[in-house]
Amino acid sequence: MHAFDVLGDPVRRRILELLAGGEQTAGAVSAVIREEFGISQPAVSQHLKVLRDNGFATVRPEGARRLYAVDPRPLREVDGWLEHFRRFWTPPLAALATELARGRRERRLRGPADPSDERNPDV
Image 1 (cartoon, rainbow, N blue to C red):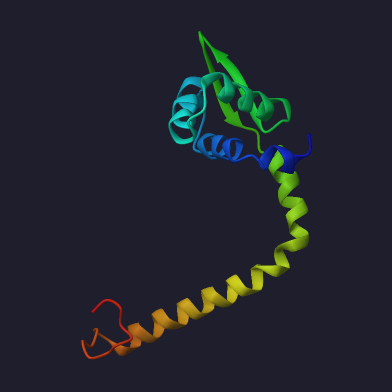
Image 2: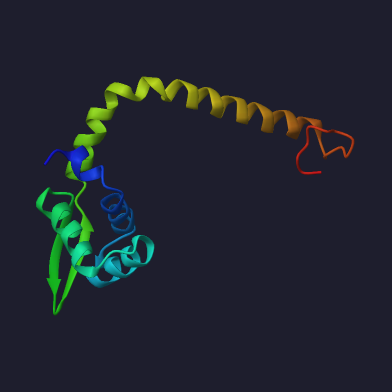
């Protein structure tokens, strides 16, 4: 299965988001996914299996529990593929960051907020 086929499913993307916060038990992942998506525990297990079989997640037994974690290798491959497209959003985001910094600098140089200044959203 291609990486984007795996990541194309919102349930699997959400599971990866949960695992990005750190290792989690299958039960903890299942509880969140069942609550958010209304799917059964066996369906969650199938999504975990797809992630595991395609290298996006690792699993290790700890007693009776199974702990899942993100395996970053396939995500690095996706990131590499996206590199071809970064030029579409990197310059605009850099320009936005520059404008935001310029606005903060101008407000700082103006001094305390003037209540008559309509552009000041803090008033």
